[in-house]
Image (cartoon, rainbow, N blue to C red):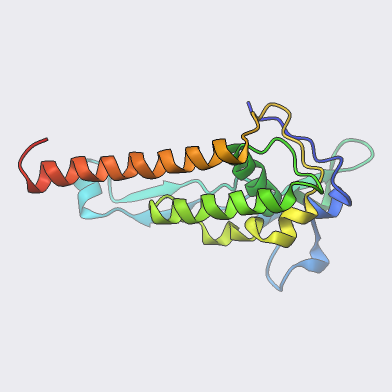
Length: 189
């Protein structure tokens, strides 16, 4: 289980969390609709129907960073305010884990950003990055604002170890593509 500590981040209450009230919403939006996302029902494709899935599918919508009602003094939900972890903070936590970053400091934040940039570009080239809406987490100002982020159970990688890990990803992908090519176009391994 990945652990993180945000308390050493300057202004962590506003940097790492988003807060909304009814006054922040557009006309027709409600706090309850953000907290309790509605299910989506869609028609199945012919392929899905052939598998016996029926005419429609109900998809339960959820977010990795869900909105929640803020607890009042009596520990009940204050239904006039909601809060969630910033999607940028959430993305940064998990990107740092993959990049072998245990802590973001004043001394290393530029190296952290460089690793995240390399990692993102590599994942895009491998076809693994498909969430452009979360790319704000990898902007230099966002990384710098998260100085103090601590991931106590992440193994730190040196720059050389990180570079080796990225090259292994590229090599493994190239070898997998070659296996597919030789199987599909050459008739064997």
